[in-house]
Length: 296
Image (cartoon, rainbow, N blue to C red):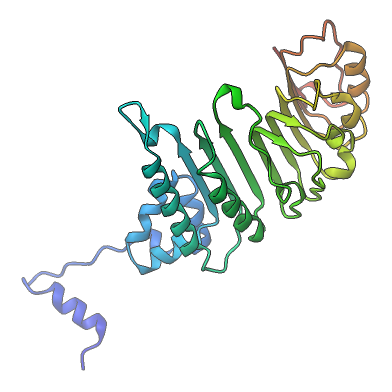
């Protein structure tokens, strides 16, 4: 009985010439390395690899990065929002995630961009997506909401997100953090808030308790319940901060100088449109080449 290799060679010698079947070097890589390659692709292109073979389908089903993009322009026809198309797309996302979550794997990155005038249809699906990601010990979460201008801060971040013990990186945009949630992110190293409203202004004042190991903090155009956030209150107590980027922050020269004196590890400082600052002095214990400062 001929072996499989002999049969392949025989099939390639039908015209008297030996033809070598080209190898697929990428398929020989480990799943981890292939996942790394796929991470550089847009989700729609990475998903297409699932139809190449059963092996590639398994690789896609265990891909640890989930990127969901629901955009208003996807459902526009003759200037009308097609709710039926929107519901169909959301159902497809549900089915795709359901198939993927049948595999036993962790989620390293969960990114969700929702750009719709109303989130009424999306909300039930969104809660399920977030819940599944948190159950899979997601390490990085990005939640970006783009709605009508009069709906700014309309979306409330689920309480479970603000107490996820596995999160290392959290980025929030155009949403509200409820004052009733128990905020505790013990593994968080990077926090980005863009157009975020904090109903509990103690979130930052209790920085060392809520985010004990944070090193990178970005706050852009974010507000408290009734006023601007008192930036210096919480940050001054956290001496391990390495990156600080502020935009539209209400902080005076005196408070800024006091804050800088209490952040000895700071390496990267960016200030944009901080109107209350007039004249500041910045010094560093590090060499100038190790410290980056940008002021606009």
